[in-house]
Structures are given as structure tokens and as C-alpha cells.
Image (tube, rainbow over all chains, first blue to last red; front, side):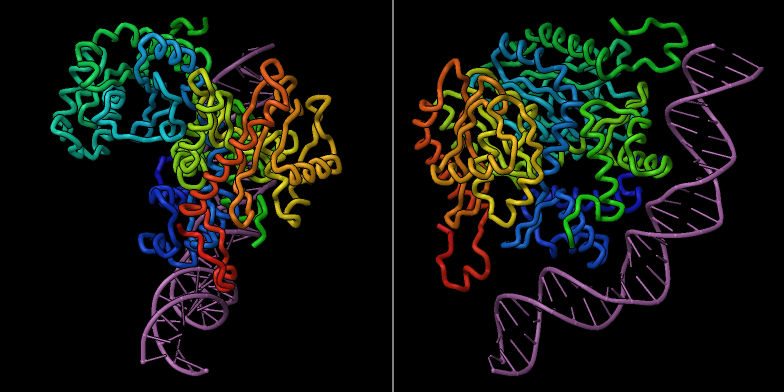
Length: 274
Length: 274
DNA sequence: GGTCAAGTTCCATTATTTGAAACTTGGTTT
DNA sequence: AAACCAAGTTTCAAATAATGGAACTTGACC
């Protein structure tokens, strides 16, 4: 019942190994995995064998290294298609991108981190997976703060404690205290800014995607650089962002993320189907 | 030792369940999974619980449905980055796309199917995961046939037997026999065509990505429609495709896919590092 | 309030995982 | 060339986790 990261028997342990391999960010040798593994050699060895035989890891026999396998790409396609906001949001992101002509991101919260699920670049062909599927910090990005500001109070403590508060720039908020104050401002204002908190010269405005019941599903942002724009310019885009987010929320609610609880329905609140 | 799809203990069984959920292509109820499952109710139930608690599946409590989870998207990002040709190929695909102005695909072979790992659209912003991560048939696509033509003879039998040979159009090759003949032509010619074998009106030219030792790593293709072009027009692009594929192969070999076996090295063949 | 299907939990049995230790392999040193 | 060493692989009795029949709960619909 407890959603523990490593509590679930053999399968949980094997997936933890998979995570370790992915976290290396480069092909990794068995010995390297062994060093930081809680498992004895033979056990880790069998996990790695199993995962490789399953296509979840790929093995380079020349260098004797393991890397996450292509089967994950297949599975992720299905996940992206079914469990993310991206399919619903796509036409709205296209429209927003066309209107505004700047980089647009769609993100969801995934275990205290921001998971970018889609992206639009104005000019060039988009960079693909290198962006979709990427994770980033929540406490110092526009989409991250926009989402955190609407996380339920009970869940917020845990999420705030998961942040690293690494100081990327002079503007980075480096404590839960400072972040809480910022989240209050964001709630009052309805949107979040990133004022070079993650990367120098990069600024952005983000709005949360909220259901009618104020459940937070994700966030949309528009990014630019201090060369080309400023925060007040971005602030002017808030209405368009808000409208986009609302449209995404409405459709998501109808098709994928209904959030009427049974209690809500019993209390006679109006169903959300159009 | 045998890389059987379901031979590896509990982990293999759990991953088989994950595949089943992904294959549905839509959120699925427990009962639906149970119907076509070889496992008894309680066993399947625990698998689904474990996978959900691990984030490999997401559960919609309102509709009581399961779908592939976002953790897969995170892991797939790492897989795409480390195990696919895409990062190496990106600049070359960009260049090819700019020169030719038609849709370009990068694909790899994954268990008898074609896995598209990257794509360039000429005009519009690219469709993301909806294409990268997508799988398609090998026997009736340009990239598929180009890759099959350079699979080692011993492995080919098995791969050919995995094809469905479904007749998508009048031009589809519907037997291993017909396909073998086509593969011989492709080997002789150096590139493959798709003459509306998968979709009416869609044609393409594809070349394999081959290492110096003729190990097949993947394929690149240019697609167009019968409205805008024809096969002889596509044939004219062969040199540019060949050049792109060779550049990708050279870099891949240096950085990621060295394919000198130990025997090769002992026999004193020249190492492939630049 | 009764009926039914779908989903969830229980627990003795059974099969799988576990991990220390022994072994193999390939490369390096004496 | 033999001895050595580190990295990877296999073995097998003990420990642990998976299994699945059956009983139970839940909520929807008479």
C-alpha cells in the first residue's frame, strides 16, 4: 500500500537497478554498478542479466557496458500518449507557439521534479527527446514553481523537502522558506516567473493547468532571453497563456483526467462532461 | 541464458504485464487485463499494484484504469540518449532535412520491428513522441527493408518469421519468399524503396547505416508522396542519403558502437578510433 | 434490501530469489 | 612462459518471496 520506491519485492529491486543505470548518464560497467549497489555481486549480476535479456538494458559486448535499452523507448511512447497531457495539449501548444513565436514548454510534476512532456521552438526544428522526457528542478523553473504553488498543502511539505536548492545563479531561491513566500506571491498573481533562476539570461512566464476543482495537472510556459525580452513583456502574455492552460484543462478533464471524486458526484455537483 | 521474452522469473512476468497494458493503446481496466492474462486474479493484481507503486503504470482512480506511467518517459529519455543513434545522428539529419526539404526518418531494428528514433519534418514543427518511439512493420517500410537486407543470414530467418505480412496495400510484399527476393535487389542496389507498400500514396527511399565492418546499425530515409514526387526523383537523392548514413556510421563507431570484436583486434586489423 | 459483478485480501503451499564461495577468463607483471 | 590479478560468471543449500484458491468487500443496479 505504501508507495515505497524500493519496497515492492523483486520487481522493485530490479527497477531500482534500472534507475541506477539510467542515472549514470553514460554506458556503465558492471563493476561500477556493483560499487554503489546494496546487492551482492551474484544478485546484482542476475538483475542485470534479466534486464538485458528483457531489452530494458542494452549491453555493449565490446566495452562491456550497460545502458538503458530501446524497449523503454517503445514503452515510453505509449506512456506519453496515454498518461501525459501532451496529446491533448498539442493543438493548443501549436496555436500558442504560432501566436507568440517563442519557446513553449508543457510540463508535469513527477516525484518532486519537473518532467517536460512537450516543447515548441519558434524557428528551428524542435529538439526531440532531448527535451521531451527531460527532467529539471522544480524550485527554480517557471513551470516548477507554477505547479508547486497549487500542490495541496499536505503534499507540499514532502515535495519541498525533495528539492536540492542548489544555487544555479544569483537569483536562485535556495531555501524552502524563500520558496514558500514566492509560491504565495504566485498563487496571488496566478502565474509564475523565472527571473534567471536556473540559467543566466533565461527568463520565462508559466501558468498552471488547473481543473475546475483546482486540481493541478501541469503547467505551460513561454521562455525568452534577456536579450530579446523582459519580465514585463512576458507578463503581457499571461492572458494568452491562461487561455491555453484553461483549454487544455477542459479537454483533459473530459478525456483523460476526470477529477470528480465519487463524493463530489454524490454531493450533486454538476458532472464535467460537456 | 536464452533471451526468451518471458523466461526471466518474476521481473520478466511483470514486464510482460507492462507490455500488455502498453499494447492496449488506451487506459485499461483490471478485468480486461485479467481476461487475456495467463495469471490468476490475485497474481495479476499484485503485479499491477507493484508496477503502479513503482510509477511504471499510472492508475486513474476515477475510472479505475491503468496506463503506462510517466517513469517510463524519464527512463526512455536516458535510453534514447545513450542507446540510440539519435544523438549522434542529429546534426546530420538536420543537414539532410535542410538540403532536401522532405520528411526524414532515423530508425533502428528492435525485435523484428522498426523503431523510429528520430524524425525531421520540413515545414511544420515536428510531431514529437508521436513519432519518436513509434514502432512500425519492417517488411513493408523503406527503413525496415533497408535494415533487413543487411541482417546477418543466421539472424535473418528468425526476423523474417516474426513479420506479419499483412497486406496494407496492393503493393505490399506478403511472403518471406517475395521479401527475400526484394532484399537481394536492395543489397545489389545499396538502397531500398517503399513504393506505397505501407500506405497508398506514400513513397520513400532508405539507406542502411553500416559500419566499416558492414555491421548494420540502423537506417535513414526520405519520404514523400506520389503527388509531389516519384521513385526516380527519390533515387536521385541516394548519394546524399548514402553520405549522411556514412557520416553517422563513422561517428557512431567512434563514440558508441565500436564493433571490432576481440578477435578482430587480435588479428591485427586496424582499430577504428580516429 | 437483495443480487451481482468487479475488485481486494488472506494464508498455507510452492517455487524463486539469495549470496558466500568457488571458478573462469583475459590481461598484466615477474 | 608461468604466476598473478582483477573482473566477470556459475553453483547450490538456505532464506525469502511469489503463488493462487477461496473468502471477503465494495458499489452499482435492480
